[in-house]
Picture (cartoon, one colour):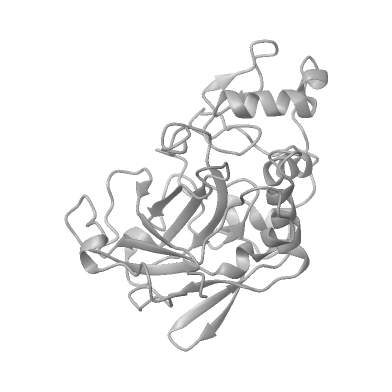
Length: 300
């Protein structure tokens, strides 16, 4: 995800990038596919990444690398946004924050290399250094296992069923993992029947536009005069600090969904993300923050 300054706000645009640039050790901002988790400890589990209304796994929307200058404990810092894409929910939203000091257990103290790594032929890693396994479909924690091969891991029954239908049934008894491109494609197109979401995730790379506006502590730009949150509508962080605006997802990100009107689609006018003003550290894991969804108001 590229960035350009615009006054007090920093604008984000979607652009294609080689696969190695989107790995965790490169500290990427990215749209779709699998999350490139920052810290490997305390990842949100299947219960935290399930829709509160329908119970289905949430889909990864984007992540934003947003370190805080002058904060040693937030030298590396990232935010991860998820949504539900199943009717009637169509946007059940959750966002998580994780931060690390420069000296940590996961990454080198030195900046990442600007050169592509040598091609080793190794498949994408679906197991963390801690031993925890990741879901083959979405890249989130995968506590469930294929009962046949005991090698494939999943976050939920839904993703296990999907992977079985999309090819694991045939490859189950074979050794080795799927190549990175195949797994990333699977994550981007979680269901071949879901034409709306598929068009969104393919077209976003074909015609990049402004999709995000970042400015910690500035005022968001609302799309209408209705459903604008008041201070009392934004819950304080569990640490006691208030939450302040950090970034918003622009409606351009989802405009591609309008091209296919097969039933209801994920839709919003603005997604405004509010985070702890102190960017507190509650352990080494991921802290949930707050998302405000403002819909487009129809005018007569």
